[in-house]
Image (cartoon, rainbow, N blue to C red):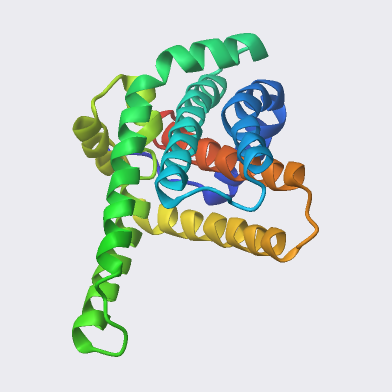
Length: 235
């Protein structure tokens, strides 16, 4: 059976509604898994005063916690869209219990992104080979964005392993990849502009930066979950 046609306007409205309706549950998870780690890093090393090995470890741990946050939020958002909204305490507790499959998928995707960034270091600027490699990586990135967007909520809700979750996500987005690509690029643009404004605000408080990180990761969790629900649950 072919998936439903994705309504971008509806997906954006539902994302905003989910963010508002589940603000307490999302906020609790974000406070513990995104905001507090961010503030602790800035408190212990306000100028990034640690060696490269420690910096890599800190960045990795923060990324894992953020991916755990994305996974637990996915469960609560899909539950709401399926007509089974969770109270804040259950939103966090149930999401945490269900998060493991989504975390595995998120880690796999994160590892692929890191590998792509490493490959990009070998793309010598101004050479045909460098241009071809840059083009290939960009193409693969856009393909992954539009094809695999709902992979984490797929894994969380359907309890699938990473490979099966990616296959299922690709099957769901078939016929809708122009729309998932447009939605992903729109959100990436909004988050990118926000990040640029925060980075240029030299006097921005650490709490403001941490709050923006929470919002960005929240969007990264909510929108794919809304897309998954829209393609899986008849509207």
